[in-house]
Amino acid sequence: MTATNPLLQSYDLPPFSAIRAEHVQPAIEQILADNRTAIAKILEIQHGQPTWAGLVSAMDELNDRLGAAWSPVSHLNAVCNSPELREAYEACLPALSAYATELGQNRELFQAFEALASSPEAAGFEVAQKTILEHSLRDFRLSGIDLPADQQKRYAEVQSKLSELGSRFSNQLLDATQAWTKHVTDEAALAGLTDSAKAQMAAAAQAKGLDGWLINLEFPSYYAVMTYAQDRALREEVYAAYCTRASDQGPNAGQFDNGPVMSEILDLRQELAELLGFANYAELSLATKMAESSDQVLTFLRDLAKRSKPFAVQDLEQLKAYAAEQGCPDLQSWDSGFYGEKLREQRYSVSQETLRAYFPIDKVLGGLFAIVQRLYGIEIAELRGFDTWHPDVVRNQGERPACRALLLRLVCPRQQARRCLDGRRARPPPHGKRRAAKPGGQPGVQFHPRCGRQASLADPR
Image 1 (tube, rainbow, N blue to C red):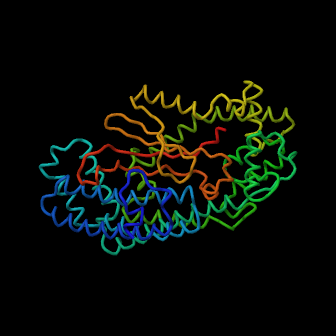
Image 2 (tube, rainbow, N blue to C red):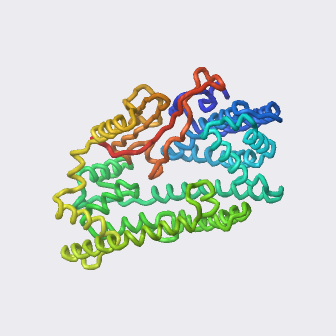
């Protein structure tokens, strides 16, 4: 399987087109087994006098190999979701959760990091190295390294369940988004919508073998109706369907209800926080963040709300007054976008649709890249001839000494008609950060960092 499984090969960018659902679980199981063997060897060699290269760098290489395999799987599960891939993805979650907990509660590994942090070598470390050690020791403690055995076992159970629930939440939201559509055969019902929005809806209908237009709950379709549809009843219907997705309300009430999932997540997060000695999950979350306490966060948010609310109230009153002038005395949530766009057109003689023609995507990105070059000295250019999960993905690479960045741009013409995008999530996550491939796969070789950012953009055509 190693020779034919792309997830077990060394690569620079993931071979997206070669990855199949049947590759996922065997690859992850193999890597986890290899990592466990390698960790035992690292601890045997590093026992007593650990070094940065022998401990931290060696563990980093193991983590990188796992991340290099799992990151493209997670990405494909988000943008090319299918029943087979979803099943393979979910089958790996318990093993990955168990492995992460196992590392965090590995007493020998923790002691090795402690020994390195207090060693003479550490005195000469750079600030970044000292910070990495400090954060590593913190993460051990947040993984329950100091807990008694029975509580460590419960910690592992809670983490595994949270991983499962997080995936279930995302899946049910995706399924709920795809479950609702409205087939329109009378174009008059779409009065006010832009030509580009209607073309997108026509393509969505055609992809389903239907005549006319198909409204769905993907954001481009939802936004078009909320902003431009003159039919108030249509706006209300689409708004209600969108805002009640994956709940016990709305047209598909209870079918993909995430309410119980959220309740269980909250309960388990509270239990996890208490296991680790925190009063609540907010305090646990802040243990790895810059904010010092939940009170500090709440104070900031309340102060921000206090300063912002008068302006928001003023804007809302103006919008209500304008809507009343247009024959809508009882402004509702599904009316705000529509009358907000009309008010903008009246006041400034500018509409979002009109502005589109002046900001084609290639021109916007060209300007953005020019600013990046002026500010940071990074030159970004488009590269071709790379493997991808969709023919419209564009790769841009930025270069500067000690810095390399990859920008994977996905432009989606006729979005709903695209086979791969039929199962995508509304907001696909960025491709996981990883290091650049080592020349020849040689361990210990210094190299530039690499990261990727993925975004779905509107079709410029």
